[in-house]
Image (cartoon, rainbow, N blue to C red; front, side):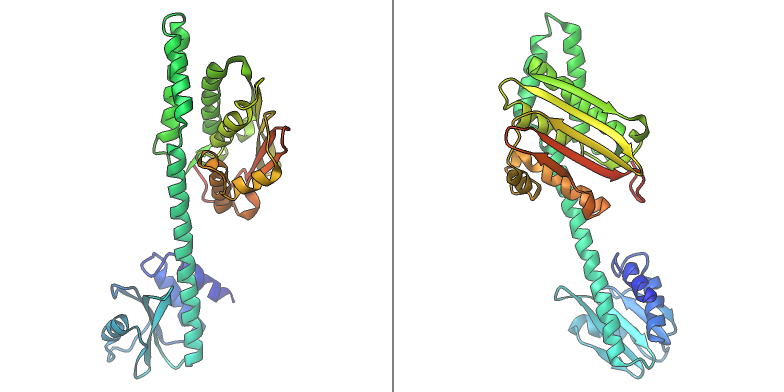
Length: 331
């Protein structure tokens, strides 16, 4: 039923959210009630319709909040809303609705509140993972980059200064308090900065190709989605290959989607190993893959996670596909 769906959506932000009164109006329509009220744990009550002035509704709410039991006076009933075995608030209904209908609506409200809590928990977890990813800068890479920069100070001061600026950009982008989203252009700039530093460290062992179509540069994507994939390609693909190799990063439009691929012709891995990494079962140095995959699915849906193509000794290809326009996703 359309009204029930709207009630569920209105309660996702909780009983202190901005759409509680709209939820009360929807519940009133579902029950054909004279009046409906929703109260949070503080006792704050928002209503739709009329509650009888001769009934102490606030005292009924206080009783439910203290006892977690249903309370009825005349034609007004106050029901506890329980989420995860904890009291979340109170539903107040005035009228002649049957108790079975009241309990069904209370169950609908509890399910919506539970879904809101789960979504909030998922968002908190994703934010915590992003903070961890921002802090995951390889000490080995930092040491090598600074050593190369220091070694160029006298023989090639201009090149040393250029690399130091690249290093500062890399650190700034990785650790700065960006918002949740950025653009493909900014991610590609961060990728090019990182690869410039790695080329200075690895020399001829690292070859790079980066191409991005102009039409996808302004596409908004979650922050730090592409850079970890490139870092994995270098650290786990090329660095472990004696003769080095090539990292290729391509970005292009395919219809309404933006498709970005990160290829390396490095050591590769068994497909089962890639599956475990995406499931978060790998070591901490590979946490970026699982983090990126989870965040993509949280933002765009389960069909927009990473696609990894690899085999032992055959290199690795990681593909990111996102909508070029997604409501709510903007830098």
